[in-house]
Amino acid sequence: MKTIVENATNLSKYLLDDAEIVVLNEDNIVVGDPPKFIIADLNASTATVYEGVTAPADWIGNKYTFDGTDWTLNPTWVDPAAPIEETPSS
Image (cartoon, rainbow, N blue to C red; front, side, top):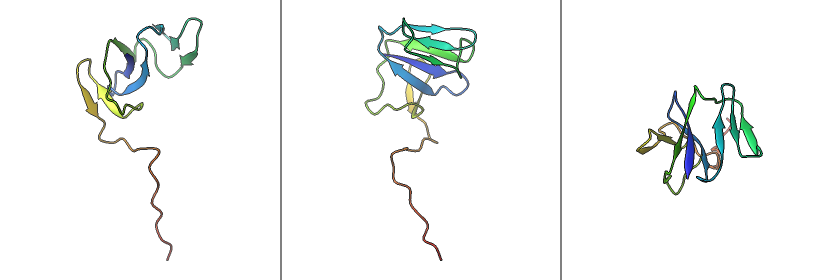
């Protein structure tokens, strides 16, 4: 697998098959040839692609940081699928 990591935070944003073509441009990142999608908020200056990685089994975008070697659980990550507890009204 390969991951696209945001340089400022080391957050692993995308996880893709190693065979997927990823092109880091000055203004964006293009995934696929022909393009499958374009990542407009990351570019060659703000992201790094690591290939040949083994992500945690429960990987979800932004749940882990990756420094090129180690995966670390993001301490501020909140499961978007977790039920929201409601505060009882008085």
